Length: 200
Ligand code: HEM
Image (tube, rainbow, N blue to C red; front, side):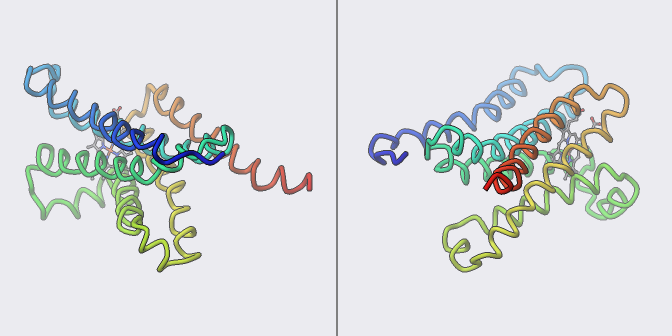
């Protein structure tokens, strides 16, 4: 269903401001000294959780567009995807500065010794590659390869769930919740690709 761009002009500013709310909330909590007994860990956890939430929201936009017929969902997809990268970068900076104390030389050691760090790092590298190639000019220049590359977002999402599962270890309820959302999204894509194709 085509929509009049003039009528949806408010959409991008609205999504942009909404996507900044978690950051504003976090800054507010820092200023109010309200991050609990371990503020550094709380910062690492919240930025990580928002990265994962934005990643999953990005993945739901295409199904929502297909199911509702509203193009508005895909109009904001690039922006939401870039916010995923933004929160992932914040998460990484918290780790590098507050947890690692900018000991750059220790990065390699951490990557080798802690599998959950290497898995998170790989997911971050994928998000960077997707962010760098997200401008329209890159879409045109890369042609079919753009789509192939951008399918890696699924791999980033799987890696993020593995990263979370590795950190949680015992109480896996959060990982099960996010993992189930991802499984649903995968199931939907597989159904679109193979289920409907078979019917034809
Ligand atoms: C797409 C990339 C990433 C996602 C989606 C992600 C997601 C998460 C989530 C959801 C948590 C919270 C776990 C909890 O509830 O306890 C977390 C924690 C954490 N992540 Fe990530 N992460 C990513 C990349 C990274 C990277 C690149 C690093 C470091 C190089 C990293 C280091 C950490 C650390 C140190 C914690 C805190 C662990 C603790 O509680 O002690 N993550 N991450």
